[in-house]
Image (cartoon, rainbow, N blue to C red):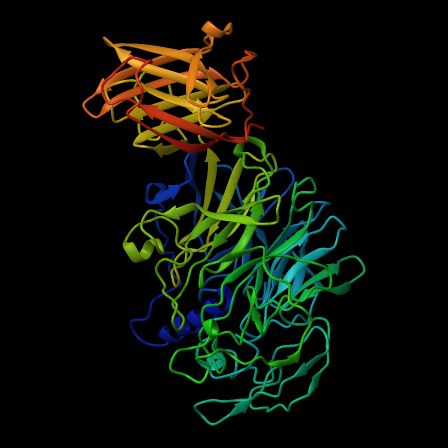
Length: 631
């Protein structure tokens, strides 16, 4: 939500501490030993530390041939802004800058062009990295002297370079927070937010504790009047911009963002987004002359010429709503708008929790990783500005699924087992996730972790891959053997599928039979039902068909086949465990074909004591299973 603001503020604080004896000594390569065991990953996936010892890394780029580049920001005193290449064994090689040259920290953007050239975004400019590591500026003069800078970058299908440009202030007004928290006001008192298009101000001014009055979109100490017009310009703050690097042309794409940090294009064949441009946007903090409470972080589909609401609109609501005000203050009923009028604001496609700092993201392109078309976004995590609760918000990777009706489902994909940054709990998992990228073949996700604040060498590049299923049908369900599990009426249902078979495990609380019905139409009708029981140490498994709402019969009695390919089971003190395998498409007219990547309703039943399939169940219930996509 506030990466650059956080970096600036904390950086100045740490730099100040170094002026005194007993300072933090940040030039030492402290580092940390990352531990994947401290991290919870979505079932069926695993995480490992590929490279450690990185200095405050902020951006990832992967070339078409799989070369991995990392931008080290140069944020920490005693460290250099540079680009390194990460080898398959986790070692790193310096790529840029060449001797005698330097990036202007912080280095936040990194992208590989369609023709294989490497580009970087440092403070206020974009540079091309030549083969010898020298830097050739291609865009300069970006308004990056305030709270936020020019951020992540992505090449579009048109060959232009797209990037986010953050705002100079928290919520439109320069104030003491820009001196005391983000630290730029003393050196750059002339800095203020630059409007992208002509705006008309409401004329609201704010007087701080030192008696200085300041309005919106003007330098600190400058008042504004109702109806005052602020001319638009490019480059500007709070915008998505694009650059034709060959022609040296810069254009506005969309505006009204606060800090659009992550940016990227959906795959052209995405069933919902069809190649659309998306950007993450960090909501405002509870600080400064115009504090905003409870504003979410956002994921936006970026439309040409679109307005996204800042500084007067957050999520789907206007700032004047009470939710954004501070109890016990004059804004308790809401924060009055700064603009007299503005275009209709476009709302986000997904929202993230307050203070989570949702940043770099990427789409899975399929391949061995699976989950094609889903977006995965790194959440830096909160630093506790104002009323933020630091511990639970962010410090994870979330998965965003896009629904045909335009909605989204957001869920955790990678998170520490103990919520919050690893250093807060004395563990060695995720500290500050900041970027996500996928290998060109879709086999692996790479997660960049900024590391601990104030600790050089604590950044980590994590690698996430899908587990190879190594389960076996033996009547014993080991921990993590199956990638998926759900529970229905006390029966734990485990499953895994490949392109041809469905592997199922049922752990029942009873000592009698247990059964599952796949894809029923109504109650039992039309379901492919598998019943299993352990009798005298041996498993009997029968393939049935739901002939009516409350009845079923074996496939063999109906003229079909028993298509249970393999089965095993055991009775334990806790109940009955059975495992079996069925084909996804048996060809039997009494078995409905199942497709990888689709979800199916299930019915589950068991008997407490009886092994007879003709005995009415003790309990039954309904659930849902989602088969894994197979590329």
